Length: 480
Image 1 (cartoon, rainbow, N blue to C red):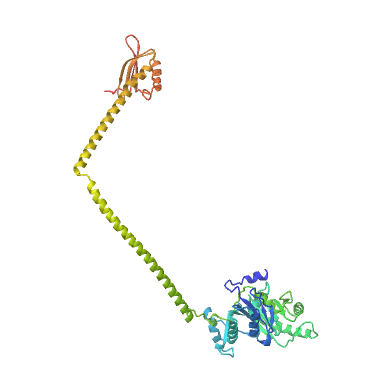
Image 2 (image 1 turned 135 degrees about the horizontal axis):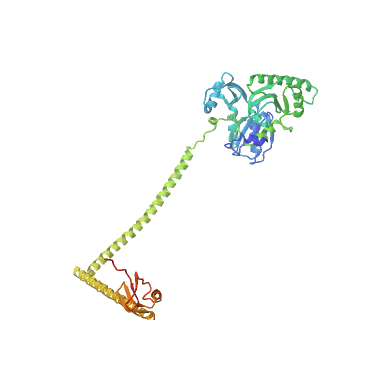
């Protein structure tokens, strides 16, 4: 896992992406990568006033309206461990100064405090800075139309610099500061103390051997103390990041003197400020913020100017709306007058047409006479249609059938009797052979007047002269 992916786990999407991150070291300021202007990576602090140096650097780069996040070095804040109070998290920043009144010399109203719970005990790690430090920085940034975003502590950043290490001890020193040893468990600083009586550098000088023995003794005491105090959190690894030192050589010397593994925090000899600036350039998550929300300037929306501008805009909007609706109302009035004139004209036309219709309306006697004539005409038309139908049926039923039978004359068939009406055709006759009868009937298909006729009964017999007789009936005789 690389450093970027490790830090991405702690990323906060709600942080300001355009924030400028500044790492404050005892002798210099270190800026994170910034795309909004030309800023140097490092600026020395003039006259030990880092706030003035910061504002001057932003002015020289021509930056305004910038959100600045500050990472303080350990010389600018104090830390304490107290029992965890039964206070809601949202009220903790207001309550902490009163919980520290017995531990600090300042007034509780003159400090800012924030805390995180320790993973190894039921205590809080509390960080404290003077309120004047934050308010002074806010005031100076306001002069160049910029504002303060967050105030971090470097302990919160060192916890995430060590790649792949969640529990380790860190020996660290910045330019212009002393040596300090810190312990980190689960990405939280659980212990910190300064080491006095050690003059840098520890490597490369004649007295380095004695100083290494002395600092190794102090480190071993701290490790032994942590091993006895931290429940379930054994520390077997120490990291080294000391400016003005050969960290690889220092780690090797301490590894020979301590009962824990020692290695350099960074493979390159990057100074502490640049290393911190490299990591805060990402949108990282920090558990400590010493610029709480209740100290940030309140944006007054209902100022006199805003109210005046809003009133003018409101009156202008109302005037525009009134003018528009008045114009629209006049248009509707004109249309209404036109519609009323049309209505009056149509009413006059309706009256005139109604009068003309009354003159042309027939009397009831004429209407009854017309109805009687229509019924008489309809009756005569029905009679004519019936007669025409009867004539056509007679023509089709008798003459056509007789003509078709005449066309189908055969030498082996002789007809003696033909009876027909509109629906029935009964035939009697003589036949030479029995087969001649069905053959003759099959010829009916070729005549339009005979096609489709069928017979329900065929009767074949012989007469006294022994001649074959037949009788075809459309319907069978009803049995008595």
